[in-house]
Length: 114
Length: 113
Image 1 (cartoon, rainbow over the protein chains, first blue to last red):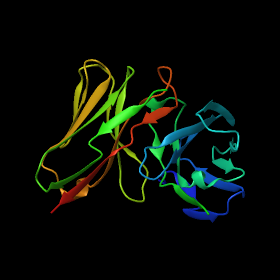
Image 2: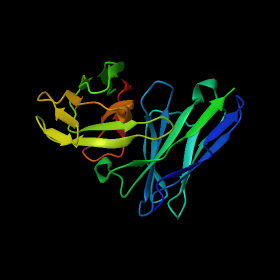
Image 3: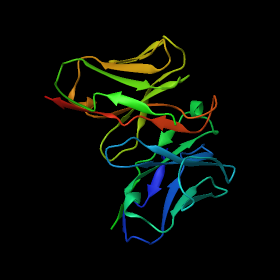
Image 4: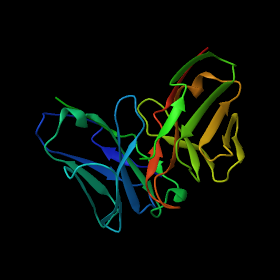
């Protein structure tokens, strides 16, 4: 049974470009949350998608947007990339929206902005 | 906003030693979660605490929910090389069963065989 799958694993982009990261949730999960983890820091909540809608959002600018598809997979889009967007982007899936339902994290996408 | 502070930032210990780390907050949390992250992987939940004063074990790991609800502690007994990783505390960043978690900055543990 596959866990959470994220692609790509690594990515290098130039400042000002746009990027799309992908996440397939664990089988049986219907909710996807995205986190940004800067080097040496803990993960920071970006947003959560449930029933194809953004349900909660952290303190991130509108340059960060997302989408959830009918099969529960999700995309994270970042526009107008800044050097400070360089980080590990983690996807976490769960059955239902609450943290008590238990999150399964993927291994992340390492984004480097140059 | 809500913030979690972990100490120490890093630890370098000998195999077999016991380890203690803690997490504090300026605001009350009604849940404390402890995660471990190994290189190249996402965080994995170790222990969840839901009640002030609660003491919960998972093998050689023991965590406690502080009485003030503003702190939590994680102990690892008889450390082994596979305990290496970054340990994060986390708590809910909102209503009772919010989807948002607040993470501390982590305690990096290295174990010398």
